Length: 308
Image (cartoon, rainbow, N blue to C red; front, side, top):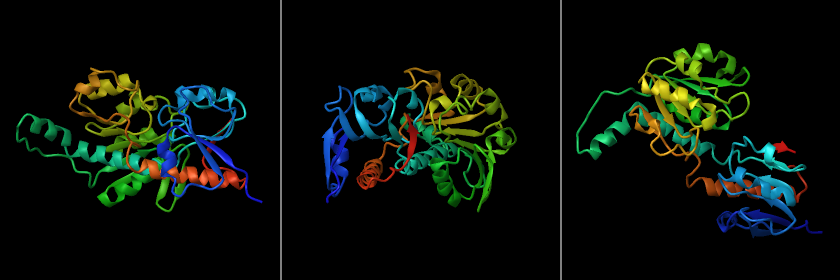
């Protein structure tokens, strides 16, 4: 007896076409969730990337077995889901690209690349002495998938990596400190990379006290969520030239045109593009294919983070 067919909605044909080969016993439909659901029952719903919070209300009239996000973060999702929904995030899809960007932001900031680019645009040759990445102490605030991927990419650069997670533990590389130890760890770090999920405990974790604990001239890199940091505090410390910032995420987002953070030479901003690379689509297709296979067998899907 063949397994029952699964109905899967994708926001566009790109994700479906990336499934090679297409799974058997699956029917695909395109639904970007900007309009009411075309059917009252869809086995797996994949919302559009970076628009999930805006469209989840469309699930109110749909019976679904799984909502498969294309993002790792899921802050604010639970409050918008109707009862009886299983929601999975996209762990395994974005960690590599987010870690690549974190490393790029660190290297660009340490070696003064933005200043050199600005000078070149003005037709000027402007050499200067810069900070290395080698021999620096890098504090990883958040040691989930992205934090671990950042660590793997930092190790060959001959740095001292210190790791922080919600709770203290020990692994083969030593101690992973608890968040409660930040006040002791921040003053020893040359570079602080934030990759925590946004939740009640981490909202505005990077506040004035956090930034004041960082040593003069240190670099803060945020590849988490904008709400993890207090924007007013960031602006204050950066304006004083005491700290350097490299931000892929901001609060609000997008950062409004003309925002004072844009004008500071010690602030490097990228527009939330940590996961926006060629690596996303094949990895997302691989995850969706795995979810389809598991559910066709009647097994639990991966990455379930919310059950309403």
